[in-house]
Image (cartoon, rainbow, N blue to C red; front, side, top):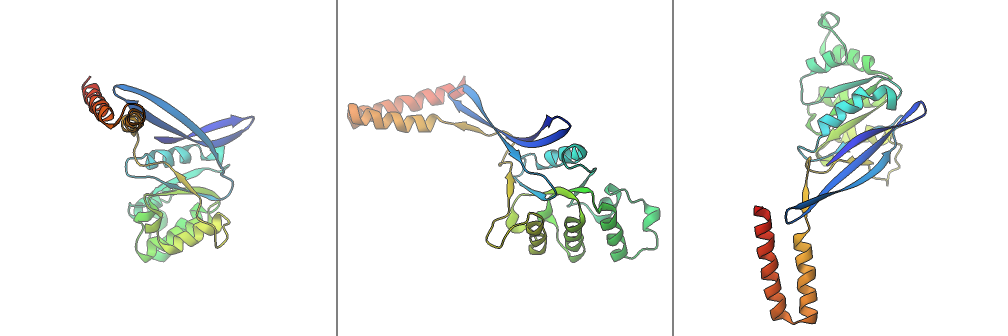
Length: 228
């Protein structure tokens, strides 16, 4: 699993991505931990991860701590919701929307989010001209923020162009991604790797027949160990 942590140095907060990998053999488990700082500044983070990887949780966490990390208040928007909820999350009440046409409502939304940090959760679910144009404008005018998606290839091309511009990329450079992984907790069983190593060693020193017997014995131990 991977999640963001906030580091405090003096008056400034820094963002880091901490990755925990759970490894197991038989009934034993242990955790490897890796931490990497994430550049924030005035660009947009592009966060990717499979379903259940914690994207929504991390996006909301960034929005809550936005003032510390990005220097401006954050607004969280779930892209799969209707535009009415986008307006509400941006702090626009129904009275302000009365009598406005759809494009005028979107203009008001964009203006409300100007120079703020915006966190757009699930941009690969954005479809339709109105929503696509709204996201493009928000990315263009926001001070900073982040977007999340399962698959970057499913994101509208126009939105990707704006994200590349915000990240200051050249034509040949790939979009910079912050990858959370696939699931909240994934246990990597190294039993099969050890089995192959042991079979190879047995084969070198004792012959293939003994190696086969050793492999069967190890397979039995692994199967029994999982029952404990």
